[in-house]
Image (cartoon, rainbow, N blue to C red; front, side, top):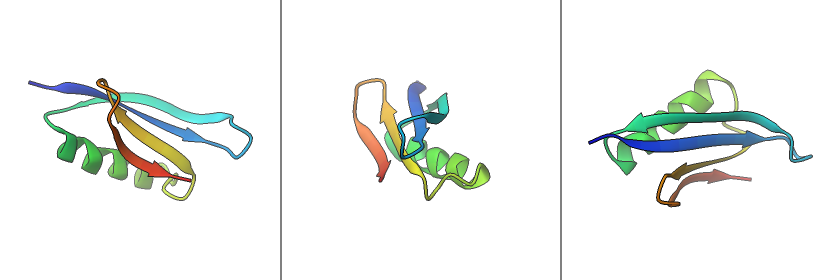
Length: 62
């Protein structure tokens, strides 16, 4: 069963650069997909977080 995850990227000012929902089969796959999205969009060095619909924090960079 797929779960929904949310990837959010911020500027230092707090402005959102990305606010994207995606689905994955589990937390490990969601973490991989989140990292891939960050790399594709050149956001891996920006402040970001990836959370599950249950509120679990999977990725975080400040």
